[in-house]
View (cartoon, rainbow, N blue to C red):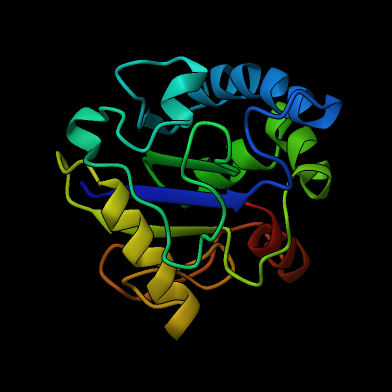
Length: 191
């Protein structure tokens, strides 16, 4: 059975190492959000560096194991050193669209989404992308980057899509049952 890959990417207003209150609040909320998401039905796994400290997020050379070499979109123009990196990104696997939507739009993650503009710049680029992978396939960071860039350049397609314009594993357009246009509009802006 295919699994759903999700890559998210956001450009922070401040570097990750900035001691300012807003940056600290972002960091402090992160671990609890990850714990809650990890218990959500339909969640399978996420990329984690071998070194799970803050240093893993501030070092482009961290070891991500089977998730591949760390990569970012070509349009990311902020720092690449420990002192200047200003990004937040995730790569995860899900059983399907509905469980991913429910996890992202409830609980602590929903509360974090409500504060996204406190922490993140508005870049004009998509903040997330989905695609289907075969059972047993682990997506890589480079897969996520190339799918996000494809989504930006070409819009939703079976190769790279959003909640609002989603596709089934066989490539046919699909909708998430019980979610109206308003909810998916906000989902496209938020995830």
